Length: 587
Image (cartoon, rainbow, N blue to C red; front, side, top):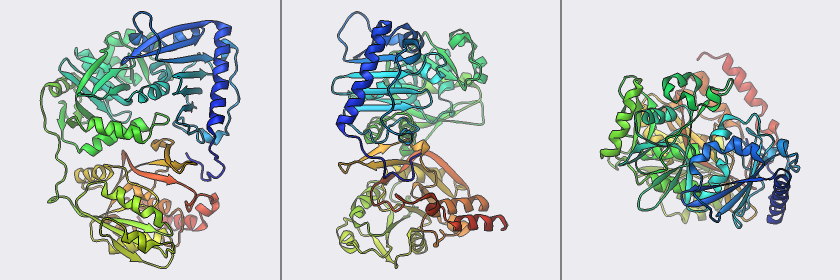
C-alpha cells in the first residue's frame, strides 16, 4: 500500500540512482570473480540476452525454465545480465538507499523514477533487479539459491525481461497461449480462472503450447506471441488430472507446502501469430463454449493482471496491450467440467471467424450521470472532463459540483469543449457535493470522478457491460491505479492496482437504487466517507461486484486533501459512531 503521508518520499536524483546501480554492479562483478562466471546466451524474439551467473548454483536453479530459449552458436549479446546470490558467493548486498516503506508490493521502489535506470525489489523472493537501458546492462541479486519460491523457478528474470523487451517495442503479458498451425489463442485473466488448466488440456490433446503464465507479444502486420518459459503451474490437487506430465514436475513431485506445482515441459512452440483472445470463466455443463464479451472487459482483464505484477509497467503497457488486442476478435471462454472438450473449442477458434460482441449503439446506450466535485481545483477540470469524453460514450450527463471554489472555476468551465451541468454549494466537502449531484442526476446509472483523478480509456464500457450482464448487481467497482507526480510535473504509475485502496468511489458504476437502499454519503465526513458508505453497504446487503479491471487513475500530488493528514484525521470518531449505530440497526 502507498503510505498515507508521502511528503517524505523525496525523488532521488539521476546521479543517486546511477551510484546505486554502479555499486550493485560492482558487487556482482566481485561475486563473479570469487566463484567464476558461468555464461549462457538466450535468444528471445531476436534479442540475444547474455546471463553471467556468479558460479553454477543459480544457473542450475534458474536456467531450466529458459533452456528452450538458449541461443545457437556464438554471438554478441544485445544485453548482459549479471546474476548472483550472497550465500553461495559470500558477497553481501549493500544497504538499501531508501527506507522500508519505499518498497511496494509490486516491486517498484518509490522515489526511483529514472527513465534510464530501472529498479525493483521483490519482497516475495527477496530479490533485487536493476537495469541500465543506456548500456543494456542488468543485475539480478537474490539472497540465497536454496528455497526459491516456485514462481521464481517457473518464471525467472520476469521483471528484467519486461524492461528489456519493452525497450524494443514488445511487451510481456500475463496470459497463456495455445493454438494450431493456423494461429494461437491468448487466454488471459486473473489467477484461478482456468488459464493453466486450459493450456495443459490443449497441450495434452496435441495443440501447440507457447506459454502458461507469461508470454511476449510483438506487434507488426500480425500480433505474435513468443514463448518465454517452458513451465506450467497447477494447483497440487489438479496434478493427477495431467498424469502424463507428472515426470516433468519440479523434483519429480508437487513440492510440499507450495501453492502451485511447477512442470517443466519438453514440447513448447517458440511462437504463434495470434488469431483470437479469450478470458475464461467456469460454466455449469460438460461442454466448453465461447460467448460474446465487451472488448473493454477483455482488454481490461489482460491489462489489470499485467499491471499488477510488473514493476514500472504504466501507460505504455496499457497502450500496447489495448492496441494489439483490439486487433483481435475476443470472447468469453466458458469452461465445461469435461476437460477433454476444452481443446475442441480452442481449436475451433483458430479456424473459425466468430463475430465479436458489438459495442452499445446510441439507440440502446443508457444515460449515465457522472458527478465531479470541485473545490479550488480549476486547473484539473480540463483533464478530468477530457478523460470522461475519451470514453467515447454517447450519453453522458456530466455534473460539476462547485463546492465553494475561489480559484477560477467559472473560467475553467467556460473553456470546456462540451456542455456540462453546474451545481453550486457553500463549501461543505466532497461527500455533500456528491449528494447534491446524486439528487440532481437524471440517469439511473451514476458514476463519480474526483476532479484531480482520471478515468482510463474503456473504463466505462467495462463497468457498463458488467452491469448489463448482471442485472442484480447494484455496484460494479474496478481497481485503482495510483499515479504519483514527479519533480518534473509528470505523473507516473506507482505500485500495483491489486494493492491499491479498494473503496475508491470513482472506481465504481452505481445503480441509482443503491443510494435509495444504502443512503447517501455522510455529509459530516470530510474524509473517509467512502469507507463509511461501503461499510454500511455490507449491512444493507448491496450486491457489489469487484472487477479485475483498472477503472480509475488516482493522481497523487501536493494539493491532495488527504496528503498530510494523520490517521486520526482520516478516520474520525464519527466513523466509529456510525459503525456502532449500524450494529444496532436491522438489516
